[in-house]
Length: 226
View (cartoon, rainbow, N blue to C red):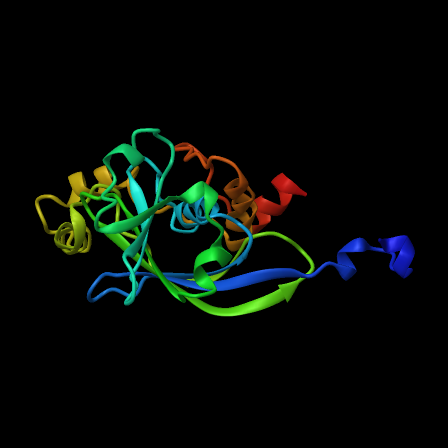
């Protein structure tokens, strides 16, 4: 293709459609969100992996995507790690599809808002909104910006999160030291933006959470991956 068009780099003539998404945690009283870009032809499985990375969730709870539709059954996009998932799905009340076989374009082209729920016990709901479509020359996902630290894993939902914040910010609390010790392995780690974007390469595969992964600043990132 490059020879036919006299273009030195084939990437210069490739048009890749990217979706810019705002992913907001639905938590009253808290403003926690991430803004990302992701190719529209990626699957909802890839989007799941992306959300786990940019919020640094540990990926050991169940999840699903939901699309509310006025003129049809609600759409449920479910994980397909376990072949029994479809066996217990509620087909009478919803249209059920598996996340690995549905592209983002299949859904966002008609429905600009999707709900992602992670951990059905704590029920962390993420409101995913399509902000705009971008044409680019590189097919990759990217974290642009964000705000707020996500709740610790297994903190007990919104009520537990608020209790956690009360204790963690009160050195006089009798639970202060124990809460800090517990939270060390449960809360979001502070990666640099560049390192997080490096980790986003994993969304094409089955994302894994590495508990002892190093927390790096920008200089450490460049030294390790240059």
